[in-house]
Image (cartoon, rainbow, N blue to C red):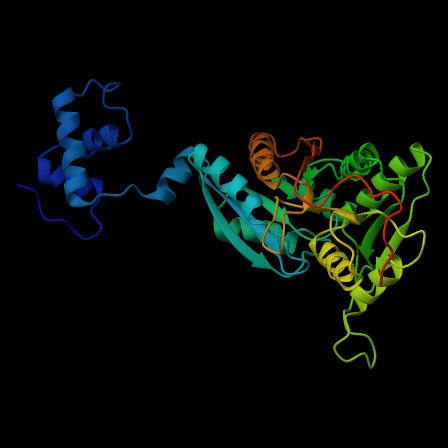
Length: 356
């Protein structure tokens, strides 16, 4: 017959129920029963009684003994949030495989001191290390402060010399151009949005990869920027981003293919092409950067995938190294990108249409 559960049962509670010493119960629950030559049947009885009484090990005491909390934190910045589900899935599955726990917290954009947020978060959350997810790169004084404080930290989607992990957006830009060149396109444009604040490294890398590949192929790069705000002064309901793409796609020398920085730009391209009665991919091929092949809008868009699941998994490996040696910088890891073929690219039409 099962014994009734006791509120907050302790090792002393189990020992009293069984008529054993606290030391014997402690050894069994800590997995040292055989080492201490405690009979197997006694070990089994201790484990059964502990379960019946609802005993749970004291996590704080266990942490003190081991010198580890068994938890890590994801510090999410309130500025420029970017936490795709693929990245979170990569983190959580890799953390669970190591029998760790993840704590998610959000703070104002971290300052350059490093002490006010990251170090305090580690103390208050009782974690062994942190993932820092913030928009833009971490300034050198901030990184040095974290290193001086011996804080095991890995920066997600951040381009820096060490302790960071990010997709290879530079090669991704080149990959998109090379794919379109193989299809026979020569007039390939790159569409991005004017930056609102400190740009993310990917904005420069994707554009640079595009420009380098175009120049290497003997083609002239054509970078076209969209306004950051869709509504211009006195424009009513006219989307200024779409208007900007209409300018790009009008004329005898219009591009036959467009590479878009991300989903926002590619949707403006799709809308403008529709207004001009240009078929995608019949008259205009389109590639953009995204986490996955996305078919929510009309048809799946050819995508340079930044493989955020692999970024998350790699970050966990890096953080484990940092926890073991907090003072040792870990070289930043670059995750290769891949091209996922959708339904928005085709060979250019001969004498393509320029209708409006």
